[in-house]
Structures are given as C-alpha cells and as structure tokens.
Length: 186
Image (cartoon, rainbow, N blue to C red; front, side):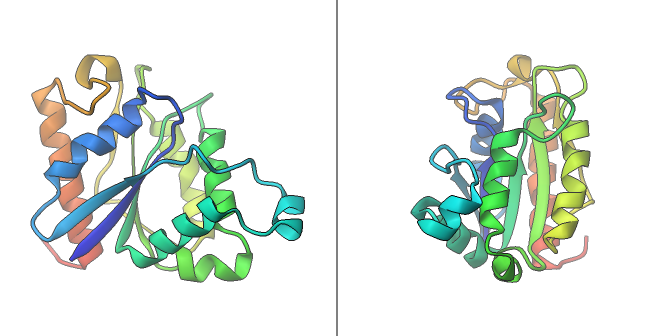
C-alpha cells in the first residue's frame, strides 16, 4: 500500500489548498491513499520551548506519521511571493532536533501543489520550497507541477472541483506522484 500524507499550508477554514487535498483524495490510484493533516495546533517554533518543555505532542505525532508514510504532498498557498509562514513553521518544528531529519524526511518523496486567488498560481511559493526540501534530504518530484490560479472559480470550500480541466490535471498529478513514490516508470 502506498500511503501519502498531505499537509495543507493554510490555516483558513475555507482554504483552497485544503480543498485541493480533499479533491485529490478520491483520485488516488488503486493501492494508494492520501491522509490529510492540518497544522492548526502547531505552535510557533521557539528553541526555548523545545529545550525546556520538549517537543509538542502535535509535532511528535505528525513527525511519526510522516516517517511512516510513503510520500508527502504539500498543498501550499503563496503569500508575498513565497512560502506561507505557518507551513514553514510546521516544517521547522518537524525538522527538530536536526538528528531526526533523516528519519522524518530523508529520501522521502515529496510533491508540491497549490491554489490561490491570484493570477499566477503558487509558482513562486513552489520554487521557494526547493531549497528547503533539498536541505531536508527529500526526493522532490519534478515530473509535474500543479498550480491553480483563480481558485474560487474552479474549487469550492469542500474540495469539489468546478472545472473539468482542473479535475483532469489534478488526477494526472496525483497519479504521476504515486508512480514516482513507487519507483515505477511510465
């Protein structure tokens, strides 16, 4: 079984990126699943909290889930032409302590997609993720790119796709990522 974990990089209740993950869930190919995880309960990273109180249980649980999965799918918004602080904060926590990075992220297949109201999608945010993913030692899937501009016109808050072309692109994207995770060739 190919088990992918999907993280939404938005805290918004009606997030287009969470909706994009919801839409992708039933599109997973046979033998693959997508489990969506939200980052609402992850506190701001603070080394003092880490050293005095230890790792928050929400972080420990998510780290263990990622380490047990076959791949990671990040649905990222784009804020000010880059990565949203809340999802970068989550990754910063998940990469602590540094000696745990190989267990959680080492050689982990990762794909990035994103939806936004803007006209250019999340292309700059996705590009900004590349050095972070490289630093963590992941295997970034470069076989596809999914950017969804004008998200309110093609997605509703429940993850229903309102545009057939987006449905086709998303299905092709998740199928391609699963092929990559499994190490198969087309």
